[in-house]
Amino acid sequence: MEKIIFDYSQAPILLLKIGGDWRITAGLPSTEEILAQVDSRTDIKEVDFSAAGDFKWDSAFISLLVRLNEVITKKGISFSVKGLTPQIQKLFKLIPARTAKTPLLKKTNETLIESIGGKVIGLKDAVFSFLDFLGDIVFAFNRFIRGKAFFRKDDFFVIVQKCGIDALGLVSLITLLVGVILAFIGAIQLKMFGAQIYIADIVGIAMVRVMGAIMSAVLMAGRTGASFAAELGIMQVNEEIDALKTLGVSPTEFLVMPRIMALVVMMPLLTLYADLMGIIGGFAISSTVLGLNPVEYLNHTASAVTLNNLWLGLIHSIVFGLIISIAGCYRGIRCQKSASGVGEATTSAVVTAITAIVIATAIITFVCQIIGV
Image (cartoon, rainbow, N blue to C red; front, side):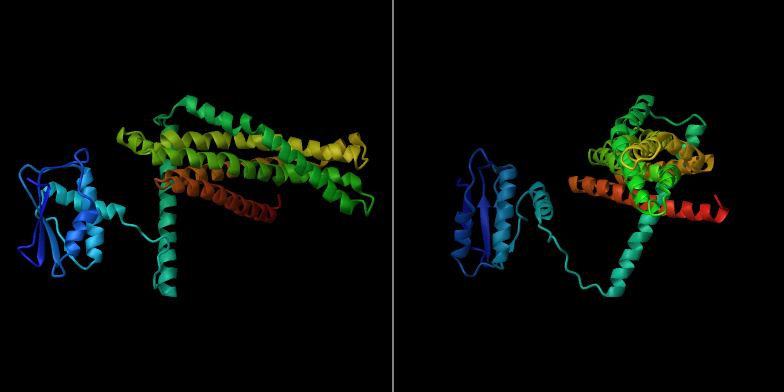
């Protein structure tokens, strides 16, 4: 039997009677050969198939059907596979839906009210999603306090190392230069009054009270917060988080909690180190370029920097550690399962963390102003 017979007896239906081996190894008729038969008659309104008992097929035959369907339907002719096996019919229905090209930009006729309403609904969903994530964190720490939380201690110490020791080089460079910049800025105004010695007060108070914590936090947001989002995002793409859930392990306990704890522990230490490096930077410039007495500079720094300033800087650092770790983990856990989703999650983690850091700094400064600290 021939592989294909064109039956015009049921016009306007063209019946394609197929049989034999239609697998890729046996070779298939070209689409041009079949389309030529369709175009040879102007009275054809529908194309259908009929399979013989010896018909054998594989995915190459399904691909041929899809190509025929695309061309024949564009000619205004109906394309049917009702005469083929149920398995072929199911695959044929699935493949066009998976290969359909969607436009890159969706043109909608939304009104302004509809657009605003959609954004409000999206914001509401995002808020509820974040609150749900915070609830998971609170529940995980509650279990940790009761000694029931499960995570690997080795992972915790590795994260501590990444958040702390591995970041010292970058923190040293940036905060040292910040101290230098503050010294130069202070000197521009203070030398007009012959009060350059108060550069020590400006550098010391600014670094210890807020600048050391802020600069450390911004660096950690771009370094560690992005790392958290990327790590958890990749795990989401690889369905490792789904696997943990299947095994009955809470991803919040196993992945999120150690990262939050590590960053909250290391941020105050990094802030203290940043304070020291900033003061050293200001001291080096003041005692060399600006010509101040080194001993007098150190005495002014010691008298200006009080414990209240130090504690306030440490409070900033703890708050910033929570913000950075939560933002990074939240964006990573909620990452879409695609490469672009990981990139968007990483970017969002950094932007969210830095924005929240600035807002938190403004709130803490305002509260301190009210209570007189």
